Image (cartoon, rainbow, N blue to C red; front, side, top):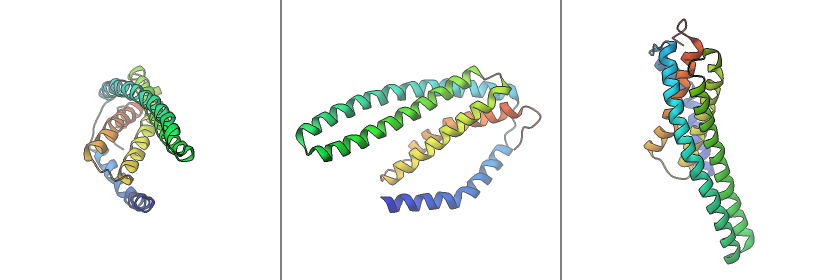
Length: 178
């Protein structure tokens, strides 16, 4: 698994310049004024609030389940092995909670700041954070042997649209092309 993850990381690192160039070409073809960017930021913000809230609730349920599983595993199996497994599971759930909160907060910021170009930089930063979290999630899924195009799209689509809207809101009508 470590070798697979390292190979994927090397592949992504080599592809990064081409991805960046494609991203710039894609954004260069988009012409968006501040009003459209504000509307898009508001819509993606509302969706982020909804999905973030659902993810927070699901993650808290998983946290409760991991605590129950750890308790049961300690009663049945070797306590060292059970502690290691339950510790990793709890860590994964805590990371999921942090990612869910980041998405939720980004959504709130997007809705609140949808018509405030001076505050768009904060939204842009949260969008980048959510894209990084999405990429990390994709890498973890691929390294665990799961490759699902739907999970890749769902992990990146909303954060990318949110970030694009924040970018165009930040730069205004005078600078529509990257």
